[in-house]
Image (tube, rainbow, N blue to C red; front, side, top):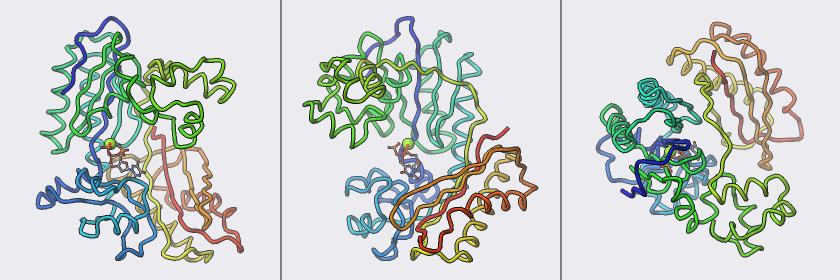
Length: 356
Ligand code: TTP
Ligand code: MG
């Protein structure tokens, strides 16, 4: 465990938690005999002919080069001996809710703020809590493990950006605390890809400016970054210094449940697409109802065509689960525009979010 310094100066104190290999960890704890074996959660590999993608892989499988969003056929080629499992959304939602409750309770106990930002990710603002950071963090990790038998990585820093990078720094089961005066030493040696928001495209453009690490990025004048990247350049300039103006928003009811399906063969058969959509709706509403969420505000449809162009369309109003028929009707209206006789569909998805 690397601890840069504690306690921290009086500045913002932000904690970021991200569960390790989340879907795969849930599967491991459900099936202890999988322990130590490579696990890949995602689409059916169908002996190397499957067409979907990897949702996640545990750390043993990652040693073979397998990672999220990789075609499942490629994962199969890299490690045919891995255990391939389908996505069990209901299990992961249950575990996620339980972990988030531990964090919410911590926020309540210390009068901090809590914000969930993904199924396995959340921030706490501990600025005015006076909490002892090391023991609070150790307690959170311990409680998550005792209750759910999975590990979490936690980072603490003076901004959401630094906390997020810190939680990733020593995965899995990591704990990294970065005090304000150490932000620059912490960030400088890191690859710019560690900064959320810098993807392959920005990386390529920055490498044209001889920028590989955060230290390199820090040497580029703000005016040049603005010239090259516009407003995004300003945020690159700030990120290289650990500056992030976002604050924790305490909206705890933002949550989404979704499911998607990749067709065996690209299709424009309306019958096939609609029956799949209805099945996705049924599964999502069942998960929501299992978790006791009865009302939500937004329905989103996602369509990926054979050429991988992906579109989403959403509609917001007040929906409630007993109105499944109404929900199907809206989903159908949203989907309709995507059903084109000359364009085959590869994947469809259905999502609901923002519970009230
Ligand atoms: P992540 O936190 O990005 O990944 P992870 O928890 O599997 O691994 P890490 O230890 O690096 O945090 O995502 C959380 C879950 O979201 C992940 O377990 C599966 C799902 N997911 C997908 O389904 N597709 C994706 O492309 C990604 C990135 C994640
Ligand atoms: Mg994770």
